[in-house]
Image 1: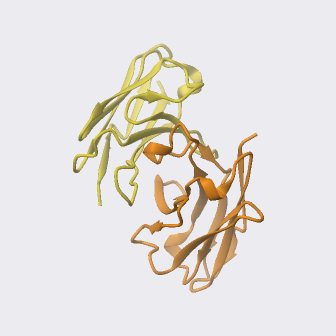
Image 2: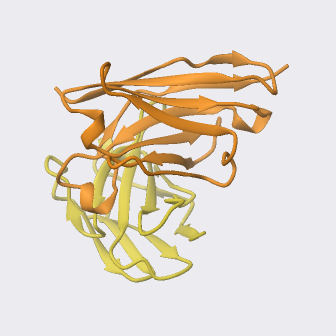
Image 3: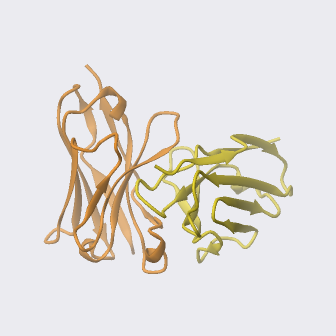
Length: 107
Length: 121
């Protein structure tokens, strides 16, 4: 199975901060990397697919990059509604494993 | 409106069986891949299974041989049959699918609200 390692597991940030979350795959997954946002008690929401493609309707402050084994999700200017847990997921092969999550909290 | 609605969760004893259902609206389950993702209390997301539009299926090792998936095209519904349930299967189960835009990457941009399964004696 492909292991997905996210870092950090949590972070504290202020509104307006630039936030970066990284995700590393245990083997090459090309661009088969997706990013989700989840708020407590809610279903995950897809933000980014294919490593860097922003889903329609997702604010442009979200961006992502990477290919192969190393990927990054960036929030350029953190907004209050962005405080949530973020997960990467590889869909290169099954099982389509998720990273452990990064909880973004208010400083 | 594109929507998924799960049902069928509940409290079940270890070793028991439960069938979860996922009703789709706004799109046809037979032409989309359909997946299940679960989340144990306080934990992260775990991919469970996938049913592809052509009929192929795949499962996480943790459920292989115990869980099966099927779809009912007449009701536009997708099912997860869970047998030989274990305490560690306790989780919120989400059904999910992908729109045409994300289909080449097997991403999930359509999600249900989740249904809780508690396996306990």
